[in-house]
Image 1 (cartoon, rainbow, N blue to C red):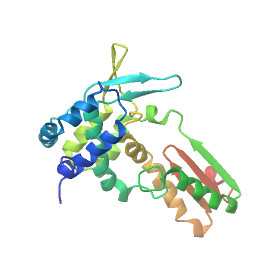
Image 2: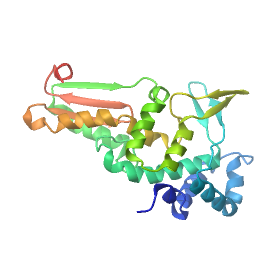
Image 3: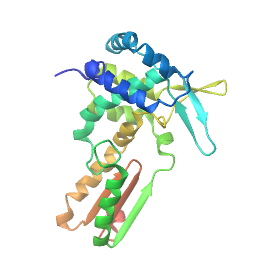
Length: 240
């Protein structure tokens, strides 16, 4: 079996990630770093492959981009490409361990599929509980997330990359801020990490779903940190 880091550093995965980056950043300013990566990709790719396999690849500092109502952290084009490559491999690796009731990952149907599922089921239940996590990405505990990743990713070099992705630092108006909690909004790896972080919730509700025939009467669907539970029992949450 090919090691995960070897898959990430492979020509096939890096070329997929390169194509994704070119598409996502095709409208960037002519001074953007994406054009340098595109122009010199033939020289850059073997260097990146060597660094990934040697465990020496390091992410650069991020820039804080602030809008009127929100902000996000901007990764360099090369770092975004590497993070996408990690996401491509780990999504395939982790998918068998993630809940089928989690709809935000690629290939699960997305928000529309989640809404269709809820709409088809809601009429069959007496009670509906809908909730989300306030500031979900920003509230994620690094140690808990790394612990979950270690359970399913038996590759120290990949674990090292994920730890660097988490424990990043951001340039904000000339100040450099060490990020000790939360994952990066707008990063191609974050949706997968966000799905894994709530796996314990998915697993617990899956146990209850298996008991539907025994009278639990539960329906569950999740899209990132938003989830819906439909129940036949009013006191379901209290008793379970």
